[in-house]
Image 1 (cartoon, rainbow, N blue to C red):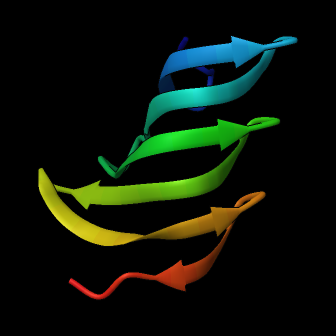
Image 2 (cartoon, one colour):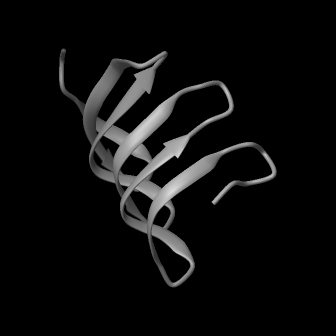
Length: 70
């Protein structure tokens, strides 16, 4: 699914919201891979920039609550 803002999501949905495993690619090239709940990053996940792991951690409803040091 591609938004007018250029964000591209590939993954699971529940009740028309991003929910479950998925991947969001942002217009600036960042990619978030892993879990979503109610269209927000939730649970384990990772952000990639230019194909390289940038951040890894745990999210709670869109906010990173724990960063796992690389």
